[in-house]
Image 1 (cartoon, rainbow, N blue to C red):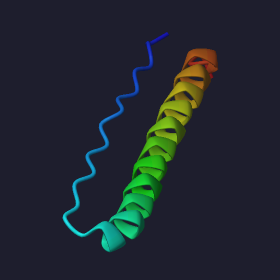
Image 2: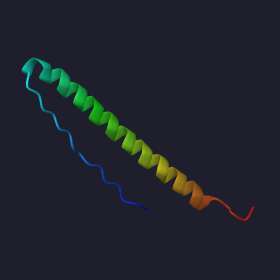
Image 3: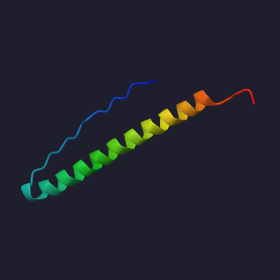
Image 4: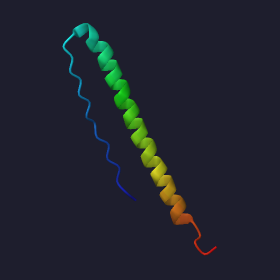
Length: 59
C-alpha cells in the first residue's frame, strides 16, 4: 500500500480587516474543499488498486 501524505499550506494575507474575515472564510472553505478532493482521490485510487489486485485475469 502507498502512504498518504496531506500537506497543509494555507496562506491568508489581507490588508483590510473588514474584508479579512470574508477572505479568511473563503480561503478556509477552499482549503477544506481541496483537502476533501485529495482524500477522495486517494480513496478512489486505493479502491481501484484493490479491484485490480482482486481481478481474475484468467477469464
